[in-house]
Image 1 (spheres, one colour):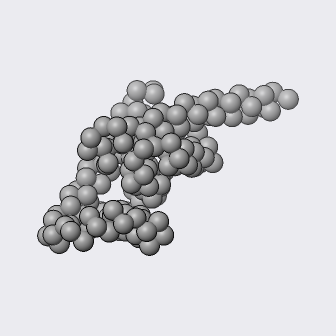
Image 2: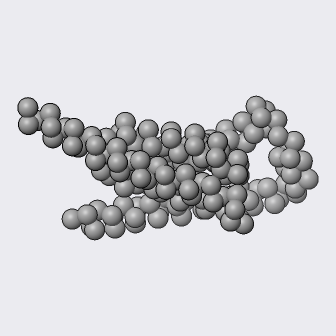
Image 3: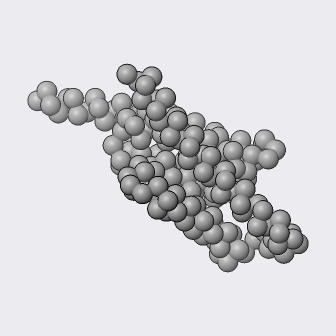
Length: 178
């Protein structure tokens, strides 16, 4: 009997924690359309809120939080491109430990970069071919190819910086929790 009560308390704590961080993630995504130049910052902040949930809750709760932030952020957020960036890459803090388990550093780095390239490529394919957003087509066709390559390179550099920040935040969070 006591064991069941402990499980219920644990589940209630996980759901409360997940709900609070889900709300915070949705707020960050909604700021994406209000704050100028927040296209990348807001999805990064929204996915970073999954870190404490990942550290304290079961995987099913963490994935539920991600799904709730993705759905609510897409429906409520004013900037759909920012929300879709979260949909396609916001799960990264959840899967990051699996990438970090790869022993060889060059292989680990290549796998992470491949994930980022595939996710952003899938996002833009979705924007162009499924949603058929003419504004995106116009923007991409009117931009010089060198500028597009530079933007992609800066995006990958930002992703690597985000990966490093997640490492540091995880260490900091674990120290503070002790």
